[in-house]
Length: 217
Image (cartoon, rainbow, N blue to C red; front, side):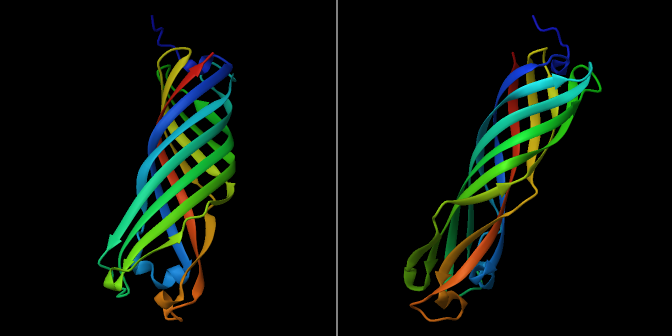
């Protein structure tokens, strides 16, 4: 039988799962900046994740959580009918991995509900691919390689404390550091020679809104 006491009252090891929606926002640079009107301005898809850590109760209604979290996400974007005459359509597919060590502070103003805020540090990787259709139905692709670097997400959300060991979370992971993905595009898109390539880059941020479940042992 559920006691409807705050799950935050107990210290212990916890295991969690989550699912949600990633919103990927690109900032185009180099050769991609020249043709950004033909490129998707964002991507939306799905995300799943797991976390494992320790919950330390500092008092009846507040405490800290230390945990390792992994999130996998995939988002898509599309742009058609741009003012760039050489490009008719672009489909973007962006796969992302996020692995972080996190520390969150939580506070339960009442037994049943709580709020939390925290920060993580770790590694993020992206595999973005932009498939395009050009003049005369010519096709091509940009990107496609997996690259990664530093990740620093801000964690915020609310909790529904079902019992001492069961908790539902609604939260968001807000990236504080963008990853600068470097690639090349056909130089013809930016006014160069048709047979050469031009350097390009895109700064990627992956915002994740998620619903999760934690069980504290």
